Image (cartoon, rainbow, N blue to C red):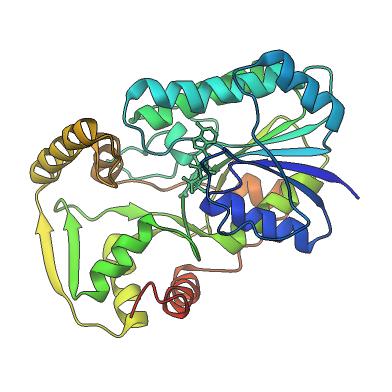
Length: 326
Ligand SMILES: NC(=O)c1ccc[n+]([C@@H]2O[C@H](COP(=O)([O-])OP(=O)(O)OC[C@H]3O[C@@H](n4cnc5c(N)ncnc54)[C@H](OP(=O)(O)O)[C@@H]3O)[C@@H](O)[C@H]2O)c1
C-alpha cells in the first residue's frame, strides 16, 4: 500500500483529500497541529503527525524514516493576523519541507494558488497562462509564489497546482455568499462585472489523483472547471438553485476597501481573522480571474465533470443536509 502524507489535513481541501485517498486504498498520514479540528478526520485508518517545521533535523528524520511515495503539501494560511505570518507559514514551512526532502524520491504535490500569479489584465481580459509573468496582488499570493520559486530551484520531483476558487461540501468562505443569497441579498462589489473561475472540490480531487499518478515532474497547472463566469451568472445560478428572490446591492469599491481596512484593524486588536481584510479586498477588486487549463487537460488528461450549476447544486444540497442552510 502506498504511503501518502497530506499536510493541512484538517482543512476544507485537506480533509476531503484524506477521504478520497482512503477510499482509493492509500495509507494516509494526516499532518495537523495540536489545535487542529479532527471533525472530518474520524476514520480509524488515519495516522496523525504534527510536523516539526521549525526543527530541520527532526523533520528530515521523520520524512526519511517514513519515506512517503507522495506528499500533498496543503498547510497554509489563507488569512493572517500579521503579514509576517504568511511568509513564515506559506513560504517558510514549504521551504523547510523541501529542505528535509533532499535525497528522497518522494513526489511533492504543492498546493499553490491562482493568487501566486495574480489577476489577469483588464483591457482584453485574456486568460492567465502558467508561463505568464506572475504579479501577485496579495501577501498570500506573494508568499505562495516565493514557495513555488524555491521549490522549482531546489527539488525535481514536484507538481505545482494553482487552483482557482474551490467550493463544495465543508467550504466556509463561499458559504458566506450562499447564505447571503439565501437571505435575499445579492451583493456586487464594484460596477464592472467580475470574470470568475471556479473548481468544485470533486474535480480538484480528481486532479490530485491524476497528478499523483502522472510520471511528469516539474510542472505547474492552473486548476479550474475550464469555464469563465461573470459574477452575475454566479448569482443567477445560486438564486435558481436556492429558489430565492433577491435585492441587488451594489457597493462601490472604495467603500469595500474602507470596510476591509476597518475589519483588518479590528482583527489586529481582537486577535481574530475576518473573511474581509485588505488581502481579500485586493482579490475582490480584481475583475479578471480567467485562467487557461489547456496544459492540465493535455498533460494529465483532466476532464472537468462539474460545471458551476452542477457544483452549486451539489454544494447547496450538502449545506442543507448539514443544516448550514435552511
Ligand atoms: N480554498 C480555495 O479556494 C483554495 C484556492 C487555491 C489554493 N488553495 C490552497 O489549498 C490549500 C488548502 O486550502 P483550504 O481551502 O483547505 O484551506 P483551510 O481550510 O484554511 O486549511 C488550511 C490548512 O492549513 C493548516 N495550517 C494553517 N496554518 C498552519 C500552521 N501554522 N501550521 C500547520 N498547519 C497550518 C490548517 O490547520 P488548522 O486546521 O489547524 O488551522 C488547515 O489544515 C492551501 O494551501 C490553500 O492556499 C485553496
